[in-house]
Image (cartoon, rainbow, N blue to C red; front, side):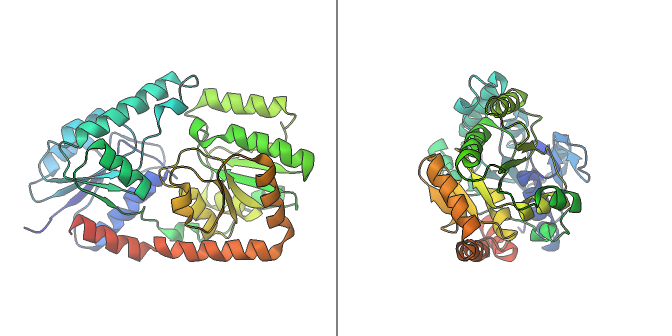
Length: 354
């Protein structure tokens, strides 16, 4: 019997969040393919509309329907939803290992530990699990899922076709070295190491260099406080910019003023900001950890360890040598072909058997 409805669930849907953007991009495709499709959540953050409370799923789902469960954090709702009618597929966006939060945020450490344990229990009840990267797919296998596949995040690239915010462009587009990192302020993303890198760059390369940290810091106040204190102790108070959440126009402007996108993150299940940098023509310099190298696909300058001197030199070479910058930008554009929306949608349709 053909699938009638394709619904999706994630515990929290929020503006600008990569998982949430994936959910809504998929919903558009499911509807275009003729399926009834809604997004369900335990919580919809301010700015998110057209989301239904997850408890409605128990009366909405029929035996011929498909429920796509997006898993990036544990939640009791998953345990009930796997017993609801219909076919189930889990999409795994990864759960940050708890050790990154130990000694910084005990509550987050406990929550992520429970999430990883819950993933193993879901393996008994969900016949197909999809990793948004091969790195994630291997974790699904290790968790006990019998049938797995890899399908990248579906991105609506049109959201990046905006006019960059003029205020941001004027404020930071003065020719100084701008190291950019985009992502929530979290211990696994190692913004503290980026602050140390900036100290080296200002001392040895460009005394006017800045670090632009674009992303929310509300969920990790302890770590955010530590990063700010580190910047102050190194005399970098005015050179490290914490933007908090930004609009699409502001995001485009921050990429537009960047000398390079620099990532020293130690854990990424799928490095979406690297693809954003490729889309917006920014060279990428990154630590090769977790799914970072897989996402970049050879279009970035990757480092095996956090050698601040070598990484700073790479950024300076990008700044000094237009041909190197152009080569990296061109490679990034070519890499994006693997994440073409129509190609990813076709792969999604095939794996979900729609």
